[in-house]
Length: 130
Image (cartoon, rainbow, N blue to C red; front, side, top):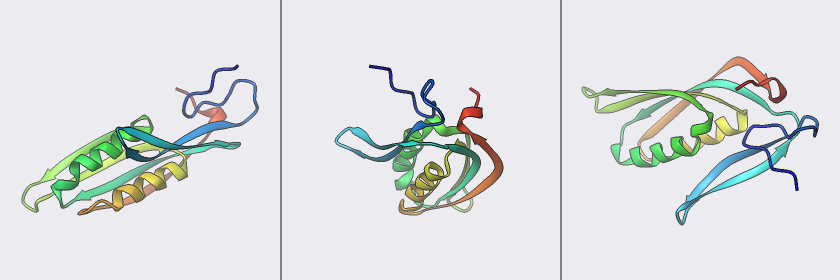
């Protein structure tokens, strides 16, 4: 058979479809993904602003960021020791579904809050360059 496309790649010669993988959970030492084929995948550049008040949630936060690592452009963390919090910004380029899924999972962590700012930079899958 024909090799399957990597995350975010459009299959060769198959028109405008792409396989998109969204990490769902980590169970039993593995990460489970929701995989679906989309016909018109658009990616957006966004920034997630994350405030961490409970350091016990940091390992789970780092695991989520690792799971979504292939979408993350960069990250910056600033410890604000006087207030006992950490401020993290994540630059990401992914579909709106993936960005929303990551933001929602982060927001469900104990002592962690997040907000997402979307840019107007939208790339159609067939236009995206590595």
